[in-house]
Length: 407
Image (cartoon, rainbow, N blue to C red):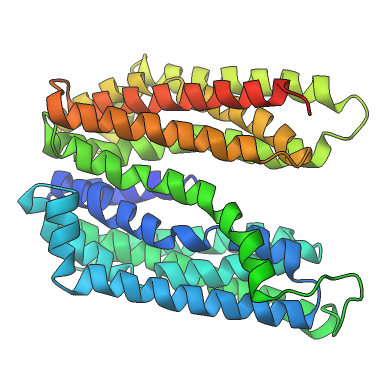
């Protein structure tokens, strides 16, 4: 899934008005869509844990439908009514020329939240009944649809870059949701029991007490995305920073992706004989390799090739992207270490420390971004990446402290 951002950037950057379209997606369309989606992002974990029989399946499905409908209504409110001007202008404060394309992108991404809610709910059932390979195939279907829509739209339509890119992302998530429904069919017909005697009854109170704390942590993190856009919009080189943010974030996220995945590996393998020292060593190797690879890109001519020749960015935008990568060098490393510490806490069912660490990160990030917007003289994307890196390092140190404090 980390390939989605670079693919989007490649095609949109080769179309007209690359700066405006990249800035519109990175500062309005994607951050706002992420925040709207936030409350249902943990449906995968909830479905995996709770959908043990038909009664529990139906109750989780009912929550999914209600939540997806309510959040889609919120998406409509933001994208299709005058409330958009409050979000884009008063809250985010993005430049005027970016707001129209950003709104168009948000409108074309209307299926985003409902599709993701539906497919994450079904993917949880696939994982529960040992068909997780189908989740991988669904991701491949999503990328195929995304790439096809990007290629066709960029070559055979007169749409703008933001329109082609946003429509392609919608095509990808809708395709993945349809695939998930097809893949889960045999399980619903043949494996999901009418009643599981070992399953606890899923009522509203019990479900919400389970789900709300689970969803709170990623929701807090997702709010940092639009906060970063709002801060960069009020700092020097706002337009260039917002355009560069989409490009740089896509590359750094790709480098961090192995670190994200390591969390589940730690949870699953920690109780195996000899696992702890092996996993600790692998976490250190992964941290060094991921940040080392990013450094190799940022500190060599690879960056110039990537931004200027491959993505075709205009010279001033390519220059700011090259420098911005340097401020994010630590991110892949601390992501791997965070997964090592978080995995241990989840394995030991001491997840309070994870929430504390995320709150610490959010406080540092929001305070730093506010200070930068008020008094910052540094280029917006450089300052924001410094703030995010500082917050991420402190988050990692807090997790390490919580792991060291054995109950």
